Length: 378
Ligand SMILES: Cc1cc2nc3c(=O)[nH]c(=O)nc-3n(C[C@H](O)[C@H](O)[C@H](O)COP(=O)(O)OP(=O)(O)OC[C@H]3O[C@@H](n4cnc5c(N)ncnc54)[C@H](O)[C@@H]3O)c2cc1C
Image (cartoon, rainbow, N blue to C red; front, side):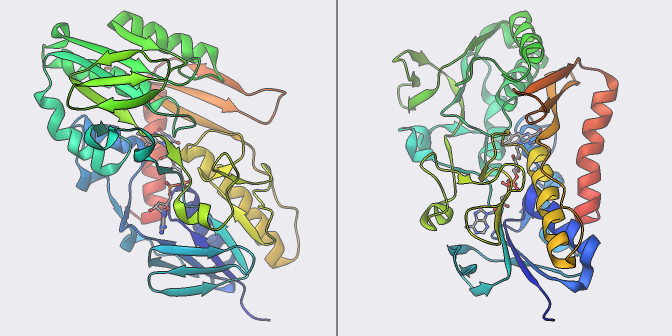
């Protein structure tokens, strides 16, 4: 029998975990091709560390050259077209046919959807976060607006963490009194599935004099005038704008006809199967009803791995995507809380809050270090 070929598009949280699990279970019994256009992986939360000067870009980059797993080849290529019917992928270097295709290309940013954003700052790309690292030390007076331009967006607590970390930075420089901080979110609360977590965050904002505007998104930015306009017409004058761009599926996925009207790839939320036979979608690109976060992308990858392993071995029941995970939340002053969210067990999503403590800091450090070691041997 010919060796089954699996092509995985995107070496992010989902692609890295999926190819690692396939390698561990099947080794050379499969040919896994993992394709990514970047030369390194960076955790989402490391962008905040870089931006606030807690780490450097060099320290947080995990080069793909360090990813070596039996049965897996990682190609640095840019994906230009996907044919989900024939499972053929075209890249800048050629074409790849396969027996099973997994699309894990993450969420892209639609900067153009928010007029003026291209001339302001955003902290959701590695480049944007790194640029802000040089800009934040020069902000000592005036109004900082942290503004989200659309939902859904990755890691719902991240803009709240940004506000609390900015407060800390300004306080440590002795300039907090001269600065205002406003956080604009297109959600009803900072972490909607967990009212307790939201209350804790809103309490932290109130204690620190951070203004929180819920149910609003930034619809345009005027960098020359220093004004952000919200979707209800409110204008906020700013001296520092820290934006979260509107998210969308990568253009190549939209062009493939895989995305629905809402922009994301429809899947069976428990199996991650798309409507195309032997084609799966996992991570931020897939519409599962769970948050766009690394821990959820990894959970989805586990379910896809289990399905592929069962299909290839011709035995065993695949495990389903659990839709549950732990999100760590920086509360500032080095304190980390966490929320265990569960989207599928009950009639509606739930979140169990754990107030900041030493254990959560240790857990978060372990979360990063264990993936770094598992995927990159670093
Ligand atoms: C500021 C911030 C903080 C965050 N904090 C957390 C956190 O604390 N915890 C958490 O769990 N999550 C967090 N996240 C979210 C997390 O980073 C993402 O949800 C996660 O990376 C999604 O994984 P993925 O595999 O779906 O996509 P990604 O990790 O985004 O991977 C997609 C890959 O596809 C590649 N790609 C895309 N298009 C192409 C193409 N055309 N050709 C070739 N390659 C392509 C990209 O280069 C990328 O490597 C945070 C995100 C941000 C921005």
